[in-house]
Image (cartoon, rainbow, N blue to C red):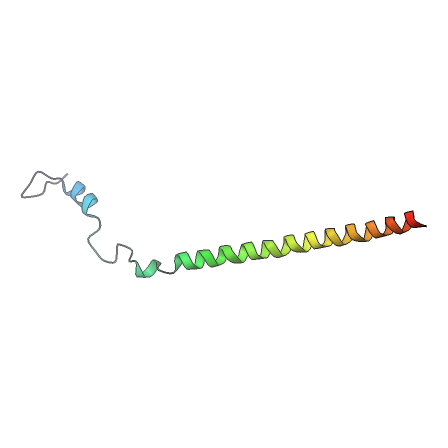
Amino acid sequence: MKQHPNTNIDLVSETIQSGPRSAAARPTRRNERGEGVISTAIAVLIVAFLGIALWQGFDGMVTSATTKTRAQVEQIGR
């Protein structure tokens, strides 16, 4: 390992502590600005589609139960 010329600090540890020196090597906040919004929108769409599917299943089950119950009540009433 090379030593820093003026101190006893290793260049490797100095690089790790200070991070990358070039602007292209580090991510900027501007590039990642919309990621949270996009992820949230995708999650909302998934939950909305699941809600629609569950509602259709529930509605079909209730309609079927209502039809069977009416048929049974009519049969008992005869």
